[in-house]
Length: 178
Image 1 (cartoon, helix red, strand yellow):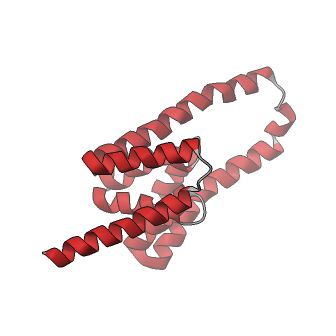
Image 2 (cartoon, rainbow, N blue to C red; image 1 turned 180 degrees about the vertical axis):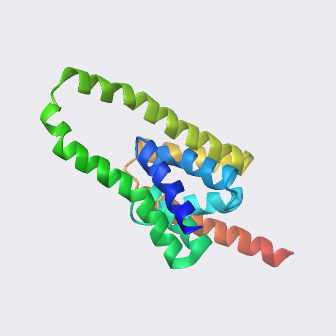
C-alpha cells in the first residue's frame, strides 16, 4: 500500500504542470474516483484544510491523504512522492535548460503551457463547485468573497476566519435549536 501511495503521488507530481491548484483535479481523480481511498466530502475537507495550512496545497493535500490512510509513514511517503518529481525537474532545469532560457523555441513552449495551466485550475474550481452543490446564500457568500479578494486589499485570511467563525455561530445555533 505504501508503495502504491508513493507511486500515485509521484505520478501526480511528475505529470502535472502548473503547481498545486492545477494538481487538484488530478489528485481528485486518482484518490477519490480511481483508488477510492477517500470519499468526495472528505477530499473537499482535505482541500479546504490544505489551503488554510502553510505551504503548497498539493504537498499539504498529499500529507493529509497519506496520514488518513497510513499515519505518519503514509504522510511522509505521499509528501515525498509529490515533492520528488518537482525537485528533480527543477534540478534538471537548473542544470541543463538554464543555458537555453533565451531560446525562442523554449520561450514558445512555456507560452503554450500557460493556457493549459489556467484550464486545469478552472477545471478544479468547477469540479469543487459542482461537488459541494453550493446554491443560494452559500453561493452568494462565495461570489462576494471572490469579489472582495479581487477588488480590495483585504487578505483572504480574514475572509477565511470570518467564514469559519460565521459557520461555527450559525451551525452552533442551529444545532442547539434541534
